[in-house]
Each structure stands twice: as structure tokens, then as C-alpha cells.
Length: 203
Picture 1 (spheres, rainbow, N blue to C red):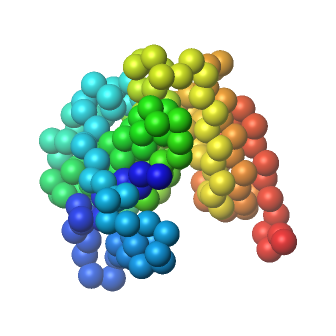
Picture 2: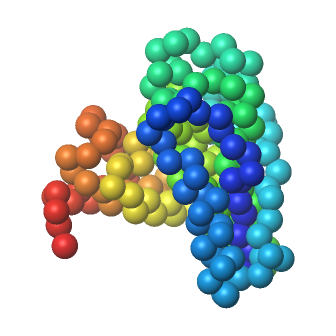
């Protein structure tokens, strides 16, 4: 099993910022220290290219992100201050999901991105600490590369995969499934192909 990590691409955040950036390096350390994986199982991914991102995102949005030209409101919705490090990490996170998909499909096995799940990014905007939507980018890439005709995205997060649902709405070749907290962020939901909303404190 190949594992793709991006924790060395640290997004610089101001003191007291609520996003737990260190969780990614802790996850890799825990997996490496658990005895089930060797150093050779961990790989740094290439950054997703503009062309790969543009299958799921508006080229004008990609350009604004990469050049630091997002409006203040758009940047605030993402929740990260702009920096070259933010751009690099966002590209690498999408690139890691691309690499994991290619690895799994080529080797007929299983692979994982240790920092994926940026499911709040829409075609033309980001939100909720998500800049580029790695699931949508990867789904479209696997189809474009002839590795898959139909794709299933299963999103198991307390938050709905609203960006994924929006980007892939009306695309019968990709089925989006989100199981999430009914009363949690985002408070205005999109419509996935299948949504299961769970109550607070469910067992």
C-alpha cells in the first residue's frame, strides 16, 4: 500500500489560528511508528497542474488563487491567509489524491492520501479550509486518463461534501455520497446523489 503525504509543505498560519495543521505530521508519524508501514511506503506527490485542476475548477479561480488575487471576502471564506505556501500545499494535497488513485488503479490495490478530503471547495471558490477539491479533481483525471469510466465518491465526514456535490452535479458518470451531521457545517447544504443526514450525538 502506498501512502502519499504533504505535511512537509507547511501552510504558514498566524499564532492562535484554529486549524490544526500539525495533525498531518502526527498521522504520518503514528502510521510509521505503528509497525505496519515502512519508510518506503510513504511518498511525496507531485503538485496538481493547472490543467488537472481545471477539469474541476474555473481557470480564473485557479489563477486568482495562484497569483494571490482573491478578493478579501473569498480569502476569508477559505479561512487561510494567502501565501505561496498555501498555494503549494493546496496543489500538493490535490496531487496526493491523484497519485493515490493512479497507484491504486495501476497496482490493483489500495493507496491513500494522508491529507485529502478538501470537499468544501467549489468550482469557482473555496471555503472551510478547502482551496481545491481533490476528490473532484481526481475523479475527472481518472476519467480523462482512461483509468475509470464511472466513479463513486464516498464522503464520511461530519461536514457535508458540499463543494464535491456542486462541482459534480448533473454528471451521471460520478456518483456522490455524503454521510454527515444534519446540523453541522455547511448550514446550507448542496444536493449529493445520495445524502444521509445524522442527528447530533448519534451512536
